Length: 145
Image (cartoon, rainbow, N blue to C red; front, side):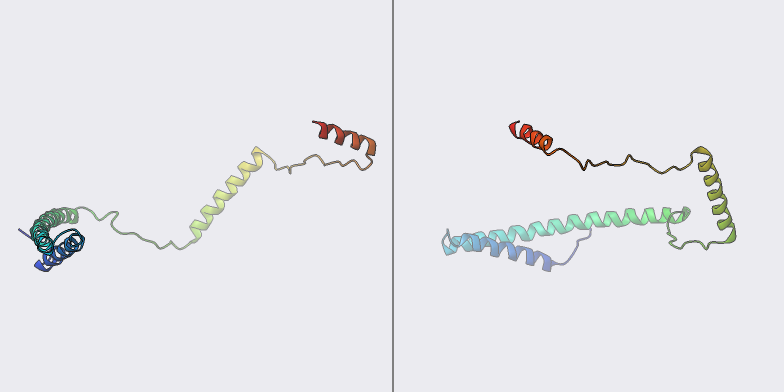
């Protein structure tokens, strides 16, 4: 049987609950009634904190015992995937040759499949010599609609 923390935790939690109850109750009750309610609040939270600490101790104790067993089983297995190597390998001559060979084969495939041709969009043509009467007529038709 294991408990987390000390009795000081119980006293702190129960005192805070008692003070909170006293502060909220003093405006509506007599002093004796307020003190009695605060004492009840203190005692109830003091006991409940023991229960809460005991449950946490049992849960953590079970977690430690299960964790210890899984750790013992884990050490017997291989250590594959347990470490991370963040270093990049040195580029040796073989790696460079492989990269050149791959790039060369990709370029030849692309050149056989399709040749590059730039996009030739049609040119925009502006009309410089427009009849002013036609422009005025178009403007009148647009304003009527």
